[in-house]
Amino acid sequence: MFGNDRSGSRVGISFEHDAAWGPSRASSVVLPIPENKRDFPCEGCSNIVECENKFLECSAFRNWAASGDFKDSDVRRFIREAK
Picture 1 (tube, rainbow, N blue to C red):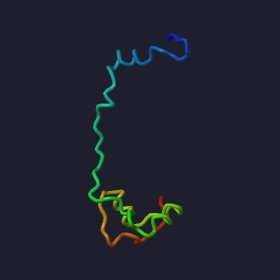
Picture 2 (cartoon, one colour):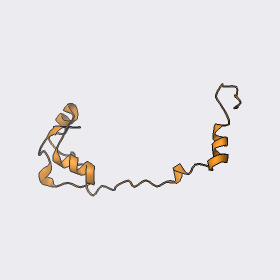
Picture 3 (cartoon, rainbow, N blue to C red):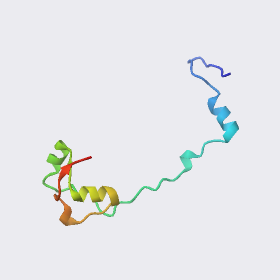
Picture 4 (tube, one colour):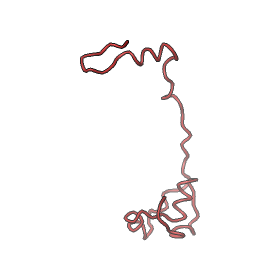
């Protein structure tokens, strides 16, 4: 059904797919990547090394990761193991 080239891989698969369904347009899809409203909340925090070593996160980091924003009062608040 498919020929082999000298490397032993199968050739012809992508050509058959293109003929049946057309060329892929997956690379032209623009993904909705959120823009962060504020910089990384851990910059300047006194717990940055401890959180990195023990895999911890605070309320500010969780909010920033979800929405790109956080309250200053949430830095170092409700620290727990990251999920």
